[in-house]
Length: 525
Ligand code: G3H
View 1 (cartoon, helix red, strand yellow):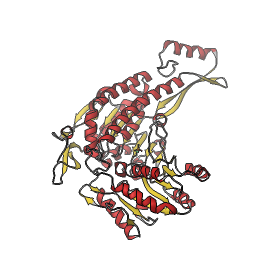
View 2 (cartoon, protein in one colour):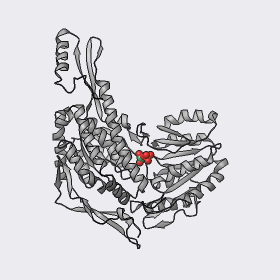
View 3 (cartoon, helix red, strand yellow):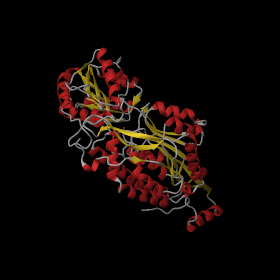
């Protein structure tokens, strides 16, 4: 097996500690082995990468205690700290994180099969996200460094933390999406318990020391193990104030159901989606095909924003299908570090069989695989099948495939699609391909009410991370972006005082003495 030296697994990574109350605590219980579906030998065999703690309820509750103690119902050091001090902890963390790029990228490739350029992009994008968050937080602080007066009352309004956050990220962006929750939650003064997803866990090991040394004890806590064994009891304690989860609605609902005081629980959720591409008859086909290829198959379609169904107008379906399938079959499959590779091993060992089931179901119900390589199975992959014509009875129409299969459904009347989208359980984004503004204009006006981002002649995507990322129906709760996430993880809180000499003198003294971290008109540049 030709694996470049720098990416070879020469030593197993046994993560034997977890982060609790600012200490890396040795886990003395069971360790779970971590395998990559990528083979290191010519004859296929999953590669052992190392192991992680299989923590239990008692250990999880101990960690919860640390997070609660650190928050101390809003009285802890972290939630009451000066903005500039929290920022300096974050700056410290990101500087240390940047030194770990190569190690993290290597594990991103092995653990989730993400290509080398995409793994590097995920790391760099995350670092940029942290810097942008710091800048946005400074702006938020500058905007709050003032008093308002209305009806004879002075008000000093800021945003304050919400409490203890349970943060669970997805396997497809184990760094970026998780940190897009974790970082804003932390910087706003919340304390966090973070549990990595089932795949993409060891890549966090190089960052544990940075977490430990950059924040006060108990502010960031990292646990390992099964969701139902560690996350469920944490929720059942009723001590979690925010559930921040990117994943699927089933797990989000199961966790919410554990919480005894549902009205106290805030939700920041990024959930499933089935983003459609709509190809109108006058679309620029070269452009549409290019965008649909990357939209449906980058990272093998394992993106919540992936195009998961393509609606093609009857008049152009033959031409679209012919050219699209040719491009699909030209995509190179290989290991993540191989030059020019576009399709890579699937990290979930049962995924190829699941995709095969979807294909078989669709074929039984009248669809065909229209590309030559479609459905070719290997130990860790199934080559993307383009299925046509897809109908509503097929599982591939109903389920979020989150993998390499592309359903195409023909249409003649655009209203059919709008109705289908309106009836769908999802509402994240859409890609609309066409040119005639007379046709596009009313469509845009409707589509913006069915989803939360209409991508004109381009594939769906989350980025740039400064743009709002959210969804309707089963696709999301609350909004993420550099700017919005700071709001999602905080609440408006303020000090009010009647405008009279007695109060004003106190306020003035508070400001002059700089004794309060909240009542202050100082700001950081
Ligand atoms: O899995 C969902 C991600 O948020 C998608 O992000 O569009 O940047 O790949 P992306």
